[in-house]
Length: 622
Image 1 (cartoon, rainbow, N blue to C red):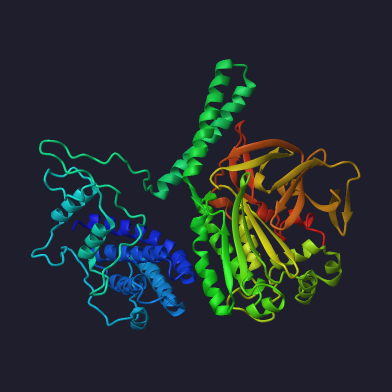
Image 2: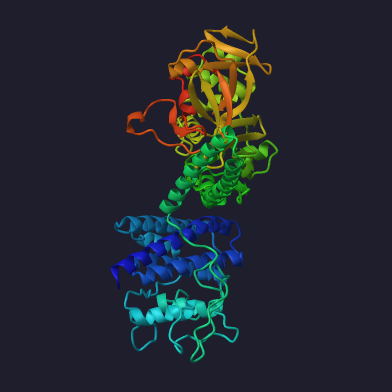
């Protein structure tokens, strides 16, 4: 086989197989809850069967062997020979983990890990049967000769509607469709049958497969083959090309902003009309390009049922994971970036939040606890909530632990409100656990979660009621491709503040601010708002002190940023400043404004860090 074609087939197999494995992770957890669900059994069986078929075509013996044993077990479950129990589900889930490891090794060009004899034995209910592993050239079972590459291509052409020579098409049923039985038989012949001798396999429920629902009608002599009228609705695009398209759309947005600024300064009707047309087209293009980067958050959620299931078994707890809002769209770059923070939040909810079954029963609660994972869109932000119906957090205990660990002193603890006490869990090194847990960490996790969320331009809030449970709300921008910012002026310089962190803007009145414990604060909405002055950080001098205050919410902190002017909102694309500026605190990049000026985009997470100059005068009063 052509090496380039072989590599392409391998890459296509990896893409399709990984999608099947992602769905399997969630399906297997559901199957453990409902082991007699025929639809689930058929879906899981079909996934292993399809992966086995592709692995057999590529002659990956160890993967075929593993899938074959899992397939046998599932086939017995489908035929009522066995009802899957927790031990067998453990073996199937372990097989899934091994398949994922094999896929990783295959994509990296390494040696694939082989299934252990112990794992294969746990999957085996009957004596082992030989597995037919196919390698090129393809061998058809019960056939007298082999199929070479050209003949196999002709077979695929007949199945998928290629314009092959008349008379070569395989005739199907009278309604011109490939039934489940026929497709199953084709896979079995090509890749080795997975059922037991003497058992008739029932047709599994159909799953999304790279086969059209209807095959083309065989071509009549002298006429071109009839193609299916239903075209493919999706196409795979390399992510590098997609990112390039997003960059070009961002550049167009900058040009649009510049043209709108020029049109506003020139009394030219034709220029104004052209600028308005460009504004409309750029907005539509920007929305379409951003939409191409979107993925449903369910792609992220589907990996969590397995995690919660494994933790519950390890801790001896009964837990139900409820997910909501899986259809909510999120930028694909954020889908992966949020995986680790959400895993840690779920682990804390399972380990620290929920009580054991006996403790819950003694407290008058159901023995089975509930962890809820919900996503929704609020304006330009995606909000993900992790909540539980467990024991909740005690503010008094949090304050006492914080003092014991030296996070704050007793005087500071006495001034903390209940909500501020809950936010102590985000302090570095803070933990209320009396013993180290391998599940939720060693007391250094929640601050890392907060830092990661802030780096993504998001916020993290905590709410809790003692005895009723806790809720952590994570909010991030809808997309990181094109940022919506608030332009502000400090002396003669321009700065862009991510709009997702901006709460409100107000003008500081005379006598509204004062110094408290060496820090400048303003009385705003009945609370003391810490103030920070950007003029000192930017190294500029001004004839008059800034009086405009931009209220920012950065992580669990809320502070006011003093500026000379609030210019307005803009959609911008952030550009890096080059290697000379790497590591400069407080600067995320730069952008070009509508009038052609350069504006620095501020990294608010860095500015709010305790070591920054801005926070020396803006640290929250505790």
